[in-house]
Length: 238
Ligand code: OAD
Image (cartoon, rainbow, N blue to C red; front, side, top):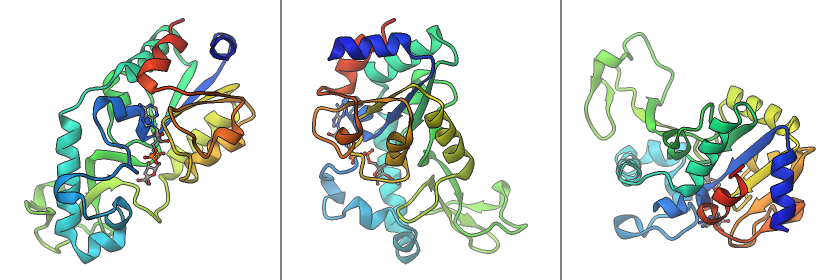
């Protein structure tokens, strides 16, 4: 089966690599549905990563993101991220990365034009529509930082549960999915839409790379049971 997939990679004119949290697992970033550890073990991400949770307890949610940012700041892209970026360097324009990950590891590995469906944890934005006073020079430090004049809060620039995806990024991802002949679905449980829908809608062949069963296995032309860092370097070596 790996041989077939290697042939599909060689022959594909346009490839989309759709990644989820498992892509970064071997860098040391816990997947989204792994149990949380330490201080945060008693919270479920679904209870923290929402606008309601942030409005109810901005300091708690902000501190959670600070801890996740610090953790991500300490890790490096793994061999899987490297293999993807290397392939893109050798074959410009042939592979587009669409990721659900907010950790920026594809970008740090050197992948160009990453479509980050769920935003980037390293960035902030205003919680409420910014007024004239909400400018970079008028931010009061704090947990979270706020506008010194009107109190508008800064929030992580990630997509929370129940929120819309950034429209242009999603449109670009849909177009890439609609025009590819091969989609590699790496390290995602496939339960969160619209990301998972990209794999269901593509006219291209779909290959799932995951050490465990996923919700997208039934949409796949081939399933490779293994990890991102183990499988991708061999698959994308050409
Ligand atoms: P999940 O945590 O739901 O799933 C991680 C997947 O990675 C599972 O299917 C694991 O089997 C697989 N996996 C674990 N280790 C792996 C490895 N080394 N190599 C390859 N695969 C591995 O993460 P996502 O599917 O990314 O959304 O979750 C999707 C979205 O749900 C996240 O982006 C987040 C969350 O709600 C938002 O925050 C909006």
